[in-house]
Length: 346
Image 1 (tube, helix red, strand yellow):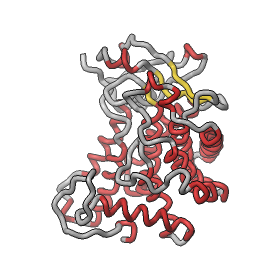
Image 2 (cartoon, rainbow, N blue to C red; image 1 turned 135 degrees about the horizontal axis):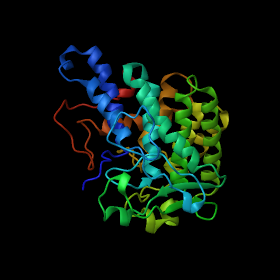
Image 3 (cartoon, rainbow, N blue to C red; image 1 turned 120 degrees about the vertical axis):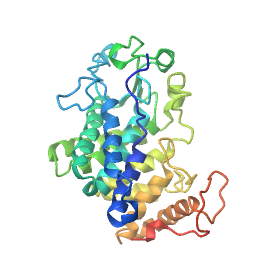
């Protein structure tokens, strides 16, 4: 039987694009025949189909029921909640945290255009951050996965009926994972901005936890797939290294806290952590493009001239996606043969 959890937790770049499309809809009548409001609604609804744990009374996907209510019990910790991955019943912390960061970012930048779906998007963020708070409740430990991917992938079943292993995997001081810890810190920091005015106490909790998790990630450096290779590979191996997640987390902590120390960390580690590397893609494993775009906004707002190199990298990334400059890893759709930086356009 095909299971009923049906979306990937890495889908929110699509929601980000849909949110931007809403802006285009308002500005460009020729696009009015596309129902972007319905696309946005369905994109966010996917997250409710992926929920794990005890479902709330306002759950809109009615055929889903409570599931995995004992997650974490074998490790003596409550790890219920969060989101299942793709068509699996595994909870992979790395892509889940990235999804949360992107979902929060979309609300920060495009929330005013989400209309009635804004409240559902905020709830989707909180469903994940509540879980991430549980996964980071012990100092020096981050629980990064629940479920054995091999046994799970060999048995297709509904989350409500699953009888596969719910093995718990963690990183700690002796078994580092700066990539997944850094992304978790970024998610918590980004979400703290979302809740800053909506729930100040919760926002402070998220930011304080983000600071603690980032310090852990930075102090105990290493890739989590080196520590947990047999569990996380080949599913969510860290291929591009953990350096980008440390910069990504620092960028979000700077945006959330405005603390000078994070700005200095970014400037100091720009070269060491390879800020300019492989900026032709953006995804759960490679954050370089996102780092450069996020930091570039500081430059464009006249707040941080010392980040000019990040803006140049972001310009290069935007140009690499458009016809006019050849790139071996990019397939171009038909269009004008010119390159421009969208970051310079209003």
